[in-house]
Length: 162
Image 1 (cartoon, rainbow, N blue to C red):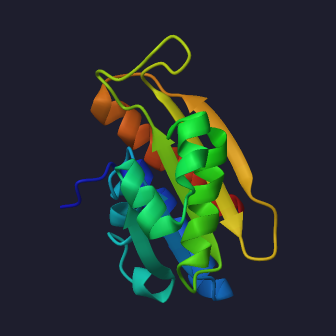
Image 2 (image 1 turned 90 degrees about the horizontal axis):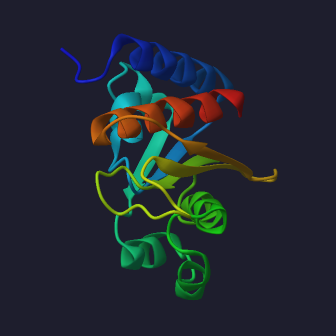
């Protein structure tokens, strides 16, 4: 039995099928989701045809060390920001042979929020080699688990659109 809800598995199956059919390799760069997007994708039989790798970069140091996110970018905008999400997605491409990467950075809670960056704020970026990097900002409702699962849904939607 999968730890993921049926709707997420359906979305993951669709992403895997589409990417495998087109020969597209995927990478994930995850912070607040802690690898859940990669986990959901690899719950699908046949995902080895398109999932190349996943980066779990929970700390700022990991974002810099593994993805090449400049520390000064994190210092200037904070880890939960559009520029950092974009740099994470682009860094996942730079550090892998994948052709599409999705990145997630956010505040899942219950603590860590502020008036400017409330609990539930998540920044997403999806990068494609040779294409523009797309960004999406969401404030996702619910407790920590709900925010993290909702973030997986958004990331899978972004991958489906690439």
